[in-house]
Amino acid sequence: MRLFSFLLTVVMIATTPASKAGDPKPKPTASPVAADKSADFDIPVPMGIPVKGIKIPHRNDEGKLIMTIEAETAKKLDDKHVEMENMKIDSYDDDGKTVKIEIPHSIFDLDTRILSGDSQTLIHRDDFEITGDSVEFNTKTRQATLRGKVHMIIQSADIEK
Image (cartoon, rainbow, N blue to C red; front, side, top):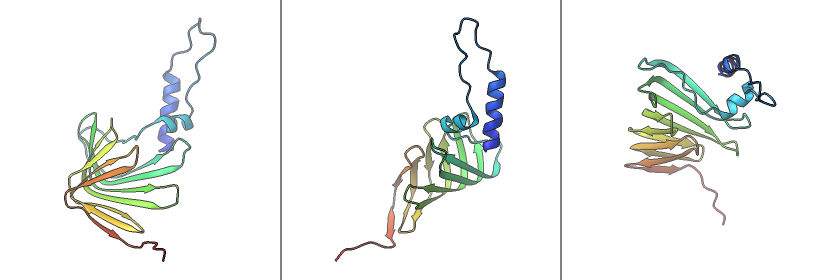
C-alpha cells in the first residue's frame, strides 16, 4: 500500500505543471507521507469486476494503524459504492484493545465512508460481544449503529464492592 502511495505521489509530481514565471516561489509538492495522511480509504477495485481476498489498512494522520478491513470479495458497483462479502474489520483504539466487526454482506460509500451491512453483524471485543440484524459503521468516527434484534453479552465487568 505504501508502494502504491509512493508511486501515485511520483506520478502526481511528474505530471504537476511547473510554477508560473510570475509566482514568487514554487508550490510544495506532496511527499509519500503527506499523501498517506490526507488520503481517505483507497479501495483498489476495478468497476464491476469482483476482487478476491482484499485487505485494506487505514492509518491516522500520525501514520499509526487504526483499522484494517479485509473482505473475501469486493466489487465496485459505481463511482461511489463498493460491495463487499464476508468482511472483517479490526479497529484498534488508544488503549490497545481491538474491536472486531464481522459483516457477511455490506456496501461501502466512498464519499461518506459509511459502511452499511444488511445482514447479521457481530461486533466483538475481549470484554463484550454484540450482534444485530443490520449495521451502519462510520469509518471516520469508528462508531457503529446496530439495528433489528440486538443482543449483547458482557464477558467481564469490574464491580467494586
